[in-house]
Image: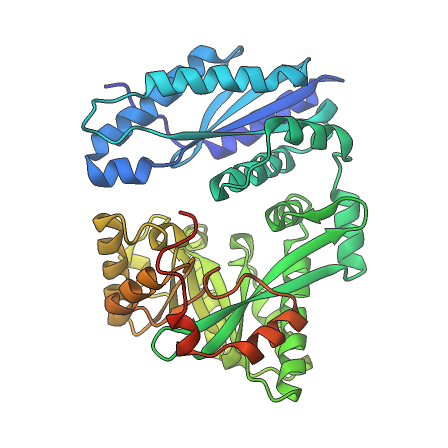
Length: 433
């Protein structure tokens, strides 16, 4: 069997930068090919079948590539294909259609096995004006939309790339300087009682000329220009200020904010958060810091030291997207976390996959051993709620309860929310998978 290609994200970004630098006036294209059901293939059959799908995908992409060193595996089930010179952007939909057809034919497996499914996203770097990270962010933005089922037609993506300025760095820095970002709030409710248990503060960016810009793009720009700490500082202060405003109205709404993986070992992170809590008079126990599981792999020793300081401040630590990374009990037992968040990818398949149900049960059991609360993301329907309750999950958030809301809309929603009675009125099954 052909060897599975190793994940080579750093090598990919380096190559993308090199090709952009030498491209001159030519446009640089990037395709992301995502095997959407690889986890299901691994769980339902065997990992050697999944490995074979990955190896065949790499071989097929390399056969169709026009230049060497332009195909990379950049995540567990995602490949990147660099198109060094795109002279006719209008023909990209044709190229992608042919590639999709070739992959579908090559990835056919025996009838009794689950067929491999793939999505193909695209981004254009006009005349090499974007950095590698920003080009990747554009493609990931399109891929995220395709995964949600609301992806635009390829022609629309290409028209947008043609029409909007490629350089979002100046609008980003201006928005950061002028405090022009927004926070939206997605409610969290207790599964048992239906009572409001808090909210997650989520970044939003509306540019006057370009409209709504994906939060993922904003975060990636911040990473690319070394402004993640400043953006996170803005988010923490804005959330703490909103907490104080609600507290003055008699509302007690614990809030959680996301901390980028790149900041997990920043020595000045605890001082920044402590200052925000003091300025806005927010009790530390009502601030939860959500940190992705993958962040702990950057520098476990330094990261644990910083998290210990954050816990000593009184903040709560939540491990976000748990189960999607490379969990290791060797470091997990030392993390001073109070909460585990079950990734929405598991929750969405809970009713259809015994493997995912078993994984969620295992995550809940693990959390109980370490005395952690379990929050399930992506709740949309009553049947999933019942299953989460039976498994022992304590808190849930998702579109079935409410989408992220502006502050005024959040308070209006909270005034209307009827607790357990509202949970009982959730649709029996999700409106979309």
